Image (cartoon, rainbow, N blue to C red; front, side, top):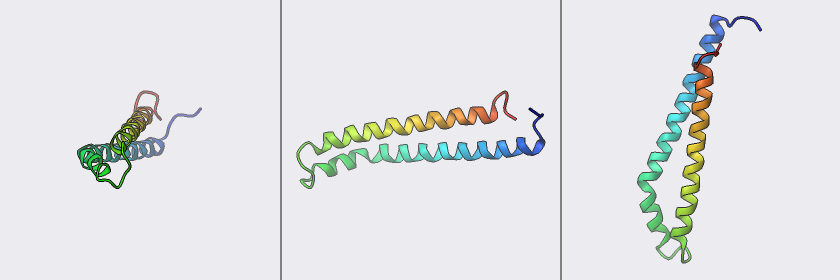
Length: 88
């Protein structure tokens, strides 16, 4: 394998910035949802949703939040590979 070029290092840095921005966007979504979860849960108890809707919503929300956390972990790993030792 040939030595990395300046151009490839610049491109990796650009991609790393995009990954970092994506991680920040996911974090923003998580924070917004967390601040609104009580409102969303209370909306399930208004009668429009069958009995137990709040508990069902909270389970689904918790699962979704965990999946977003896994996405964050994956983005952090990609970022480490792009910027850490051994990156081009």
